[in-house]
Image 1: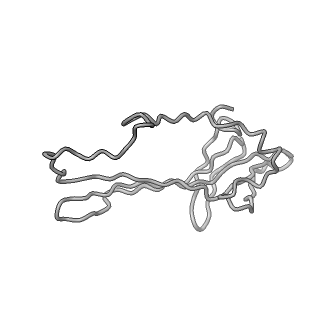
Image 2 (image 1 turned 90 degrees about the horizontal axis):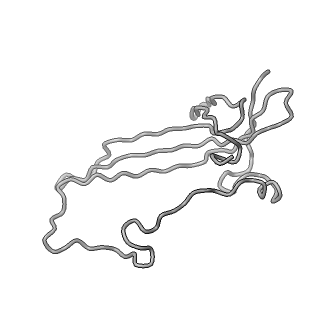
Image 3 (image 1 turned 135 degrees about the vertical axis):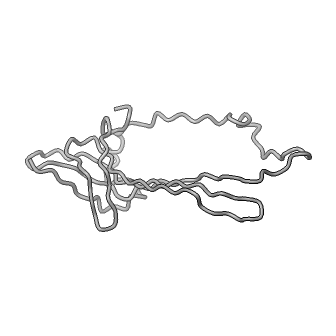
Length: 144
């Protein structure tokens, strides 16, 4: 059996090219946010250091980004069921800020993956990037 995929032509920033009924069948997220880490959410405000606190000699700042590059449909020849997937990029880095030396990047990592519950999903290699196939537990995410 030959496996394949097609790229959804719909811009990934607009979600998938599905009708409203199909979208309603997808599971809602189970993510929970804790807004009370530093202060209760109702009391949150910027906090200024006390008068005797000196700035650090070195400050390391970590930041990252994730992006859906494309939405895919994976399938196998002879199987009429196509399962969704996403080709995504993640990047993270650390910038070192030292007193008198300015800021300089000290670490950068970029990862690209194809996420799908499809048993047919495989690595995708293009002239622009390579996406490593990662099997999702179900088409709706971790709770499926």
